[in-house]
Length: 98
Image (cartoon, rainbow, N blue to C red; front, side):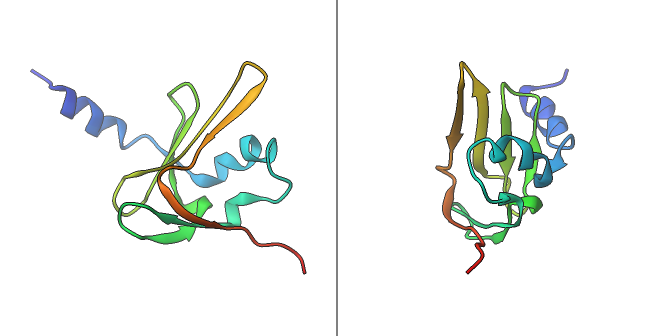
């Protein structure tokens, strides 16, 4: 009999890269955040948002660290608002023109 852990492990195989976040994040930020560097609050891994593993079968998008699978950010659009949860991110370095 399959367990909840088996089911969740199977779901971990169905992700896309962080480039899918370009659209939802552009509703909030003027800059393209897929090239921004994020640092995982769990393992310290630093890399572009585009390298995160994104799952879209929830009410919004859940982006996980490619190294440790910790949730780095969540984006949910609904009720005339965009909800952005960055609790799993220590820092987000956004490139800007100088």
